[in-house]
Length: 248
Length: 248
DNA sequence: TTTATTAGTGTTAATTTTACACTAAGCAAA
DNA sequence: TTTGCTTAGTGTAAAATTAACACTAATAAA
Image (tube, rainbow over all chains, first blue to last red; front, side, top):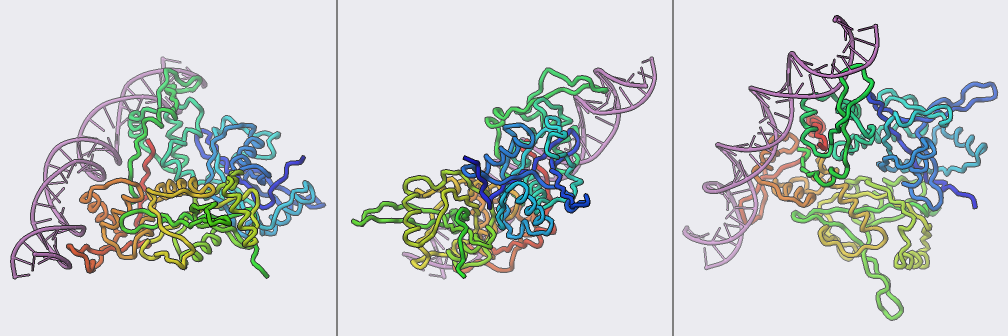
């Protein structure tokens, strides 16, 4: 029995990666040439796919991430569902959909609802190469032209990531297990596009029990090696204190 | 030409109302009797409906709110999409779906994805009566048994409302246009289930330019009448300063 | 051994937060 | 018209938090 897609339901994943310096997004090349070899379509899209029968949106998202990166258990957060009736109606997108139908048999409804997720990964863990379905990292500050409504999805994902990162310690999903305080600070600065004071930042971190210093230093760096730290979700859950700060 | 439903897509609305004292949710009665008049089903559900062809989820939600309350332009926020494959599979829910099909012709797919919204209204504006499809307000702290996965949806809605209310001045959507500071404080206390210090609260509010005192007082109260205030979204947008507070 | 580079550290002033209790104004009842 | 009831409205001082700011330490490479 063949797995069947649900023609009017898809999932799109905005995969964020941090390389120690910049926040990046994983994008897929989308190209189509005419008979003479000229590009009809030459842009990028997010990674996405249809939901399969019997599958939840979350399962579909995990499946897509596994397909693209090869990893299971990537941090995922559903942030919005896009249901505009003209999501796929631009001429380019219509050509692409027709092409997919002819070449892969994939049947796409006129009105496709997309449930969107963002994922957080340490860029160093996943370096795409030729085997990886034409995907590559692009800095969030310099995103190329995107097909469908993926620009909008991408913007909403970033907004949502920031929103979320203010409340919960999800930054750590962008870092290696053992990280330096400078890496942590850089990640936060990259997410929010801000600059923080190093000394004040470090004092704050020292007060927090779930960011735990190791008896271990960086190796092979051409400067004073930094101490390494780990984040403990467990300690976080036990010691977090919700303090209410209203918007006024 | 008849309007057609999309069989595998629905919208559920968690309608929150504030009565000056407590946070409430609007629920719909769901009853079904057998031949002898005994209840087969006697519980409650959120207000919801299928998405129609050519409609976005947001439009469907506005349509549902209009149907239920008679009002347009209610504050709405999409917060999650529920796609569990067993969302509708409990025996009661199956009986109900069969009943709907026989009696209204409504065809519901096995796997229905529901895009969920919460709405905020001033309870005083909408007082349901017999004409209102068996809906009634229930205090959030005392919710009766709910059908489908609506308990879960309701909990996630509350979590999401709190999350959202921390960042943006949406409390005002629960209040009449002109409100007292005590009403505002009560609304915040109801949302977050906390108590605030009156003097500190008022000092904070005075610093804020977008909560504007009127030259007008309450009438007909058996105590010192309070000053009335309005909220200006306009002033808010112009004067808000995003200050970053990290979770640590 | 020198250079380049990033790690790591303390103090002070300004601001914000917290805790706390009495008088004022209107209506209703006597 | 007086009294009582009820909620509105107000200030201060101590404690905690934030913000601003510059130099020494440790390593690898030249």
